[in-house]
Amino acid sequence: MKRMIVTGSAGLIGSEAARHYDELGWRVVGVDNNMRRSFFGSDGDTTWQRERLVNDCRSYQHAAIDIRDRDAVFELVREVRPEAIVHCAAQPSHDLAAQIPFEDFSVNALGTLNLLEATRRFAAEAPFIFTSTNKVYGDGPNLVSLAEYETRYDFDDPAYVEGIPETFSIDQTKHSLFGASKVAADVMVQEFGRYFGMNTVCFRGGCLTGAGHSGAQLHGYLSYLFKAAAEGRSYTIFGYKGKQVRDQIHSRDVIGAFDAYLAEPRPGAVYNLGGGKANSVSIIESIDRINQLTGRELSWELSETNRIGDHIVYYTDLSRFRKDYPGWRITMSIDDIFEEFARISLAARSAA
Image (cartoon, rainbow, N blue to C red; front, side):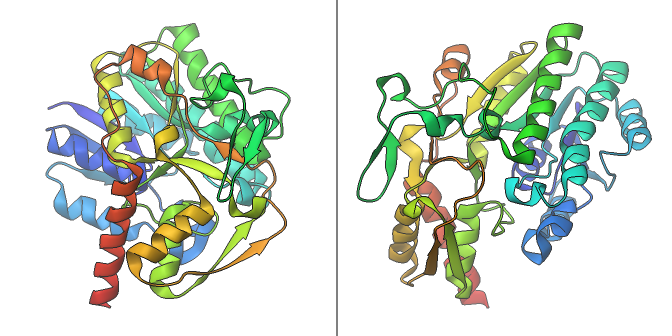
């Protein structure tokens, strides 16, 4: 039986990965100590997801260790000797990072280094998949010429008609402390691939989404929007008239990218990963779709203050990944994503 370690296994992508590879017959060891609850309160609590994994999976084993604990990480990797590592654990909020800079950096950067070095020592042949972020580009995308439309902003430069590519600079921009800690981790993952010849990959994600998300006000906006609509909460839009644009990629399509990489790994690889232009949507467009799908008017207000380092427009140029892995494709359209959330939201409301 193949062995895999998945960190952040009770989060959105980690749980999707754990469930998927368990179904494929891997022995999956999931690492998650539910720090998301301490970051975001009850909205971020992932206990429900961990319990589902333990109860539903055939060979899933849970390890509630902290990736900042080097000795515990080394011991786990030495014991499991994984044939693949999927590293999803993170402090994921660029807003929260400014309040907890040491926790943010130690989780995102130091925790990643602990895992990389443990892999190099005890499982050097194992592909190492890292869920990085588009925040490594800082607010650089805001310097691209933009056009304003009735419900959204969009790029107004032919060079970015397909979105932001991997060649976009990560230097001399405002990242937020979260973005900076993820840059440190991203570059370190690359370096272990390039310097030591390990099969490492950074997937710089846009908005990764799906029904398994424990969405909170400060992270996972689409999941949180549906939660707010279902529970009658008010939502605050931070700046840009609500016309800021993100591309949405479903967690299952993220796992499809992981599958492609595991089948043909490359050392030190870097790929932007998101829904692309076709799956892009603004916040006010999102709210309008939610109102239509749920039959409820989401209460919201607009703050004139935007989040520091936030993107006005970001969607992903998928050209590089599609060239290297032509068998991979987006299977969940933006409509599919919204409809899935609506079904689950309405079902939960009926059960309440």
